[in-house]
Structure formats: C-alpha cells, structure tokens
Amino acid sequence: MYHWFVLPLLTINLGRSIFRLVHDGLSWDGLITLLTVAALVMLAFYARIFALSVQDRVIRLEERTRFEKLLPDDLKPRIGEFTCRQLVALRFASDAELPGLARRVLTDKLTEGKAVKRLVQNWRADRLRA
Image (cartoon, rainbow, N blue to C red; front, side, top):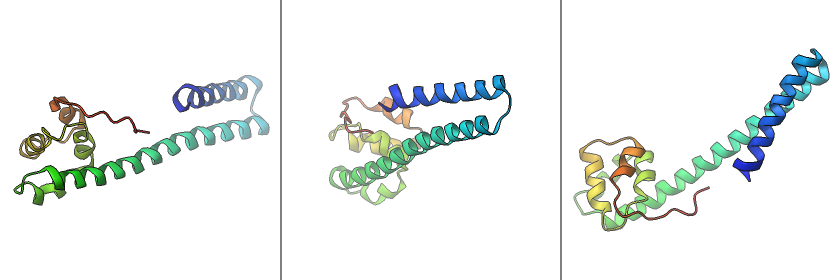
C-alpha cells in the first residue's frame, strides 16, 4: 500500500498543487495547500525512514545474538567490529556459511552491503522486512 498507493497519490497531489499555484497565480489558499501537501510527503518519507531504522536496529541485535552462537571463539571478540550495514547484509547468509563470510568481511574490510550480499551462496529469506 505504501509504494503502490500512498506515495503515488501524494506525488500526484504535490504536482497538482504546484501546477495550481503556478497556473492560478499565487494565493494564500494555494500556498497553504502546497505546504500541507509537502508536509504530508515529508511525513510519509520520514515514517518510512523511521520504520527502516528501527528494523535495522532489531536486525543488528538479532544478528549479534546469532553471531554469538555460530562464530568460532577467535571471531566472537570481534563481533563489535561489524557495522550495522555488514550485519544487515550478513543476515541472508545460512548458518553454515556465516563464520566464513564473517571472517572474510572483517579480513577484506568489506563495508558495502551489496558486496557482502554477493558473497552469500545459500540465502536465508527475510520475509518480515518492512
């Protein structure tokens, strides 16, 4: 609903408000309408960003817990070195391949999520992503 209804409708409304303000001339009502629509667009974007930020924090916590269980003893003290992006990307790795990938991410200093995801061979689906 967010991507296929809310954003398109808000975008159309924003465009319409700008068009009316330019076409009909500057008026107090037109300006208030444009500002209200702009506020709604910002609200929609920030609501999405806030939800994704909270979700990434939960993933970070889940993955650190998972790392505690699956990583070999020599890597456990290094769990704090993983960035949030690395942890979010490594969540797709199967339990069997996680220790090797985690070691490679730290050794090769891979910081980009896409680069880490490309290394994953056996994917674990994340069907609960917001």
